[in-house]
Length: 464
Image 1 (spheres, rainbow, N blue to C red):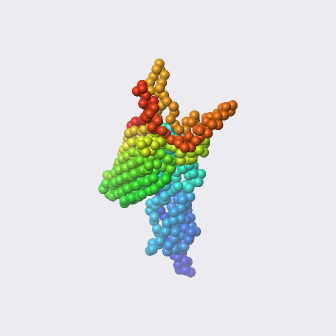
Image 2 (cartoon, helix red, strand yellow):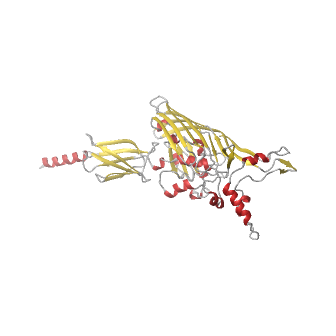
Image 3 (cartoon, rainbow, N blue to C red):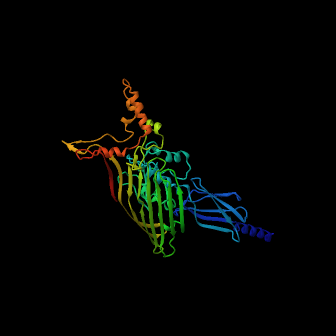
């Protein structure tokens, strides 16, 4: 009897020790632990939740040759991992990277819409609280593409409450406080891969972050997959064509890792008429692992671009001319010429060094420098000489949709409605409505020798 009891006890102990186990350590794209992820194996009806440090362990109730591990993040993203038990009862996934939706941000549209619709108000159309992410929220995605912060602001706050960091360094505009996405526009192949979004303030970015959100863009060759890529894109929004080439080599051992990207975006005009677009983008990434404790990486970005602006339209003008109308341009010598052209030439240099003191403790040294110019042209017509402190010699506003040139101006007085004048103004706007460059040149041929109209640039020189 005792022998029989010992035999059953042996079988029980053997069954306990022969259970199949799946374990691992969940991290995100930047090797940060992922806690609160639901893990389950439908074939075994077992499930668990990853711990705060990302670890998990699942013990199967039955023996299987193959199973599927379902991983669901707190953001409700799901990943399926096939598990095969060959001759072992333990499958250790090790450090398993799980890509969450917050790490896939569509910055291509962000950059393009921001570059086109950044008006004098200093607001960025593409930036509505960093809502362009793969959350597939219909309201936020629609608002980001269709409206500017003039008409929609997430939580009533402007983009100045959103923080963007390149390699850990805040890159907000010195003048506006909001991120200037055009400074790294066209680098989508790298910025998309190394981009991560934290909603509201977060301690994970090694700073307090932005009140609305914090977008972290890490540009390191070790974070990208080695290889070369050539892509050609076509668009009908702000530009027509985009050609991009990139090559990456991860650092291996003490060898130097590098990343190179070049792209060009161009078009005679976008969806809105009279908006020429010309942009070049290039970046150089270098990374060196000196030892197990020390690593350095260098980043250089240069994205010069030139683009014609489009104007906001009143309801009256919109109904007469449509949504593609733009009064900022006119024909000159058979070519479209826009009076408001924005040019940006701002190189960025970043240098980072990481010193791993011990497990879980490190020091990071960051250096960044951005310099260059941002300019925006416009027509001047307010006068050319001072007389007793007063500016004289100005001309009429050349804007085709100036309020005095609209039909509503002739009907402003209820006691004296000038329908004939309103009709003529309406026909002039419908048939024309563009800048008359020739008339501006003729007006400048004055006897006094002073020009009435001028085209000048508002220039900002940056060094930060």
